[in-house]
Every structure is written in C-alpha cells, then in structure tokens.
Image 1 (cartoon, rainbow, N blue to C red):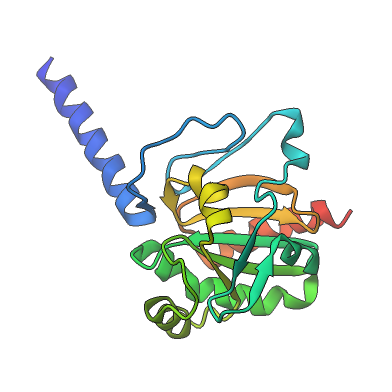
Image 2: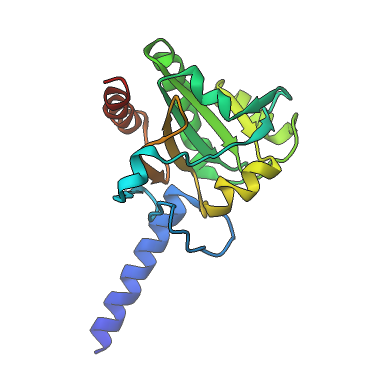
Length: 200
C-alpha cells in the first residue's frame, strides 16, 4: 500500500515538473467548453467532431498590434496557414521558444505561412516588457494584444500558455490545438503537414 502511494506521489511530482518546464498556467480555473480543444502541456488535443474542420475558433475580433496598428480577424486572409502562438510575458517556456518561431516566420514567409503572436497578458499597445521580449528574441512577426473581443473569446478558454492554434485563410481551425512549447524542428514538421492540407 505504501509503495503504491509513493509511486503515485512520484508520478504526480514528475507530471508537475513537466508542466513547469513546457508551459505556464494562466491562473484561471479550467472551464468546460464543448467547442474547445484542450490538452495537457506539451501535447495536442484533437477535436474529432465533424464541425472541427470548419470551426472559426477566433470568431470576429478587433484589436491592435503591439506597435499600435489596428488589426482584425481579416489578418488570417493574408496567408494560406496562420500559426497563432498565444503567449504571456511571465512565461519562460513561451519566451524560450520565440527565437525558433522568429526563424520559422522568416523561413516560411514565401510559402504561404505567417506566424502571429497573441500576448495574453497585455491589453495595450506599446507595452515595454512585451516589446523588449519580442526584440530580444528576434520574434519579429506580428503580435496582437489581448483586446476585450479576444479576452471574452478565445482567451476565455485558454488555460495554459503557450497555446498554439493553426487556422486557414478563412479563419477555420486547421489541425489540433497545441499546448506547451516545442522546438523548431517539431514546429516545422507540424507546419509542413498542415500547410499541405490547406493548400490542396
């Protein structure tokens, strides 16, 4: 009996450490949302419902970029595939993967792919901390701030950062929702697979 309890405690401790190393919690309680895909950190959650392939997960929104330019859900029409990386200025794993995302953004720019950052804990443009992180990590793709539309929409169902969601040019979800950070090669493999699907 004691061995079982000890094994269970070790398992819980190991999982907690994995969570700490790959993602940061938002501090919000988990909400049950029938339309959202959620997963444990460093994994993917598949939505196998028939409507998942045509789900406009971000809905309609208006916001600003970190630089203060107006932006809306029309941003998705600029590329065949958009990788939306939801991150926070407090999140170590988010910041550690941003240099790789910056490189991927530059490498895939001519292939119909764009990367967009959504800063979950910044509600105003020109936030110094967020701008410094973007500059330091060379994550020089577009970063959107958390407007009221986004806070009551997609961010209301995100409990872990980084969370990454892919959409096609109509804003329909492509593939899975990914929780936790990944390295450049892992993201490249995912992008290649999803890009092939949306360009067919």
